Length: 376
Image (cartoon, rainbow, N blue to C red; front, side, top):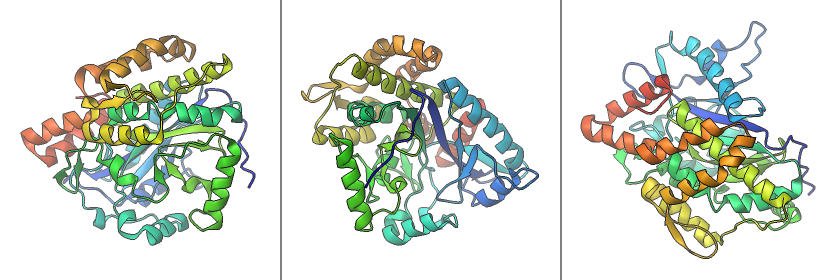
């Protein structure tokens, strides 16, 4: 199988942000995506270019254009958010981020009427119906296909750090799970989700896709739902490990860090340097530690097995990536990561609110952060 990789401008960036539709009166999820999307259609019935449907009818996805900077991509999303509110406010629907809803029942959620979603649910049954999850996906353009797999392998030494910073799903079906990102644990139950394989050559990836297609595991490449994957159609590396941000400020922070990491590794390849790697067993362990302990995780740095607190590693990354951020015009965005190091991640705020005032108050806090555009 020939898996073509589209031409893409180096380090162009695009962001996808999945949002929850909440009932303004009780904070539960509303199965209203079809009504909302219809309200966003233009006079000729054309769909909104930056607001898309998702697996469940309680979700809409904001999608930026192909942009030069993270700030430009987030501007696209904020304009789409404003358009979205013009439709949802009269319907008494609130918008929220977060990797999961604090108390909604997974079995009560309705699936969007599309063939690929119906196939997913039919194949995965109970686990498929548990996918009451919301994430952020960041695409970064790669100008040369030979760079894709080395950059993916390098990102696997840092993807757990991104997951810790973005962790925003401590609750599931009304329960405190004890995990910073329960979404990470739930999503990997799908047969083609979770930690990707580490291929050494593009031909190995093509062989894998051919085998998965021949045996009926997938029908299209997009059904490989790895935490990091190539996106051949767009010519990008797509980082999908982050829970949905609960506010624009933290969306900017984690997106800028992702953007800078990809460009950093691309520049290392240009200079003929070896990129960091880690064995699969360390990568899988890091994902679990990050999901469980979040900002308090002790993560394996690289193939040597050396461990370091996630906060220390990220602080070092910010210093190392500052020149890259300057080139990408996202110094201010990258600097916002320091606020997460200083003040904590979304899951920690949600746990404090729940302890003080209960799960209903958690949904109220998610709505408030979305409106404020910053952590509260």
